[in-house]
Image (tube, rainbow over all chains, first blue to last red; front, side, top):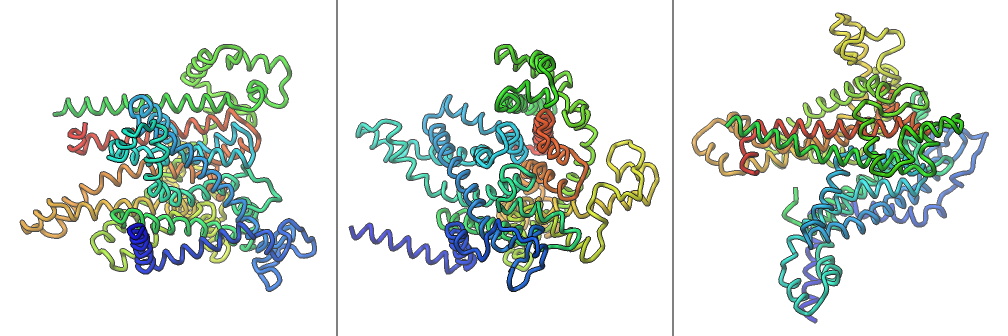
Length: 288
Length: 341
């Protein structure tokens, strides 16, 4: 019992060391908290209804009533940017969760059994990687139909190879570990060993992969809706808001596109910093 | 020695075949994954029963999957990529007509990125924890977080609307100019060939903002890789030996360290190119650039599936070719590749 709490204490100490060493990570963690808060409570704290139009109050620059100004239909940009957090984050989290589960299942079996399983999984990820990924996502959405669900599937598919590769590499170095042998000696089946022994051990590098991947997933989904796929107007989503505001940039109404774009950038920046921070925590050797 | 290199190059070329095959299989699946009856989609909205039946025959939709795939492959090989519904012309023709515009933009963007990122990465690696290193780190983290379409719009706002330095972000050439006589399709090169200095300057002016947008996006991974591999090379034994033998700093840096560090950077360029082909679509939309990306977006909006799938396939084949070229260059220049095999 004391030994476990010792280990726990060491971990907390290491965590605090990383935090103090790198104030940027503290910043990233607080930003992450804010984003999650907005995604959960966003719809209740917006000052205006993000979908309510107001024909008498269109294209107003930022002022005290409308912090980020209003758009061409008189909707409050501030409320829309906040309300969009949930949809953007929702798309990215679902896509990353999908590719995490399917990718780890594929990667674990490839790394554990090797042979044909490995060859098929490897060939499959190589084939996906042979496409420019954003272009492949466009093609998938075009073929499966233009809906938000298909944006999620497309983003999940193009991220699959990254998870499969990490899971495969991490599993294959643990395949012959002592605890795997002893579990087998106790009569556990392969599936059981994978699920209860190997998978928990490869979780830390997989978590790093998730947070490094999250920002890229958000960017991808926003890019797809920027070109008119998935999310339909009037829904508030950062990519489509930038697309709607793009027409007003050359006439000087910058607030329509700049604020949602900045929110998108900040969210991606936060996840990338977090990924770097987590990697330092999990794998200090790869610190750059 | 030479023949063994040739064999290696041949082996690389052969290794690309499975990728090409995989790409074709996936694009075949994508054309058949359309919800409902693909024949109805490819025939278009205006088609009557007869022409739908004709399309069904042409695509072989009434036969087995394997037969359909073989028909698909032979159609592709004969240059029959289908007909674009929105323009009524063959997809290959449409893509080829727009490819030079996209290539010009992508290549200039990539060149710009390499020209900035590589020296930056080298400087950062030789002066760890200096201000150059910090700038490099900031650029690397910020660069991967920038949505390209947002950077593009931001640059338009600053340099077109506020400062008025850049021309209006609409297309490859201001409407005041005529496009130069077509030789390569690259306006900058064509105008130089025609000896038209004014058009050259005008087309370059249109290129600056979109190319900078792409470069900002591509900068980060290149600088990161250059810095990391330079750090690795500089701390290796042969550099220590070179230093101990009294070679000058410049010789060590350029001949010994950089040459060894350049190879991983070259490999990264393949990945960067993949991202650039995607980012290109977004940048083309922002700047109304008449390239294949804009064509694909128009096709997507118009549900013109043959055009979209043709675009995806063309991009994938282009990407396979780029990777192959990089691999072949690596095989020819790097003596260590032979040892790996």
